[in-house]
Length: 507
Image 1 (cartoon, rainbow, N blue to C red):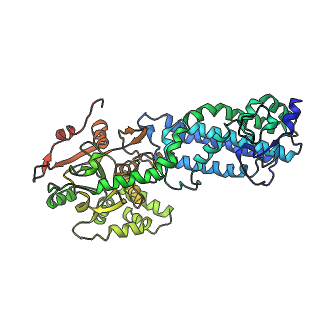
Image 2 (cartoon, helix red, strand yellow):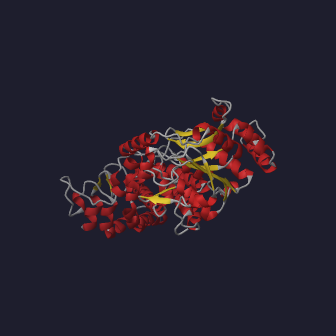
Image 3 (spheres, rainbow, N blue to C red):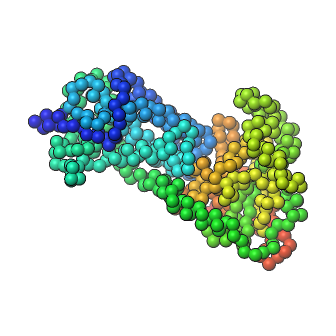
């Protein structure tokens, strides 16, 4: 009697989805799609998860370029299969006990779908660096906007118990007006009996049970971690973010009176001393933004050099020339050098760089400011009273790759969340982080960084860059200039003086 009741109830809005009926999947197609989803899960483990698990605690905070690329490609494939499954899942007024093979296959597709979604969410939720990808402000690759967030909402909708038309929890399945997987689990024995009697191949029945088992296996893990996604819409991209961005933008544009900034003669000296790929950290004592950013170092920028300096610096390096000649050929660009590659790959950005407002000050800096990632001359970028610069201990080829990455980011908005895991918006030091991010597939070793964690969000601040210099020593110290609040003359400081500006406790 119990089985009969369970078999005759209607699956109204089954699993919370209001989907139009799609083309019927065959049993073979269902098995093939399950196999493809399993293969994608294995691929995700090999290309992303295994790599993350082998990293040090500090390194695994961020996805490197190859991990990010592999993750996006994997999720895009998941998305294609999910859309196909969704079109063939159980529809409105679906009868759980239907003897029609097509209806039974729709139920199989539904369970396979939610089992795979549970497996995917459960896997990525263990890694904060992956979650950062879903805080991106816009579309990532070919993924639908809010792809993972939508999956989470759908999944969490299945954890609620069934209720009747008065929104009261039902005592029996016959009273259920909106069935969910949570209700299936309560009546699991009856459901298993029903599956056994379905006119489906044994392999399809096994896949249905596996889908339900995957859902159960990852259920607690997802429920306990779902709040990692909650702030995504509001704190990271919604109204709260806009208010925060406006306030910080205002603070960054207001300065108290003072004339102790780096003078033009010193800016000229800095311009002559810096080489393409160098990194600088600066600060202005009388900026109101120091209210939000404590410490001696508040801003980072990357020196790429003017067009002439870029050409001279890299054209003499055989490794760079061979590498970018091949890149030009592979990408079908009419070029045979690094400078030529930049011209063809980023024509508008290079045109902007080659046309400075003042010929005495070439556009040699790429930095992220409140207006976004921009190309500027040193005359504008060094309006500070404190500056220190470093030179990465890397080959010219790696520096060229870093400059290429910096060019690719010109025009992106500023990241007022200061979440270093995200790539769609970049704060000043995040530009440096991503420019020198390791990419094993390109033979790019990159640089190592100490990072701060504020409100569970990993960030890279200016003082973190200075700390990283003293800890990892994969940068060379170039100079440290400072003009105190009561001094008109800039002072050349030592490396030992630089060490006194930061707290190296525990490093």
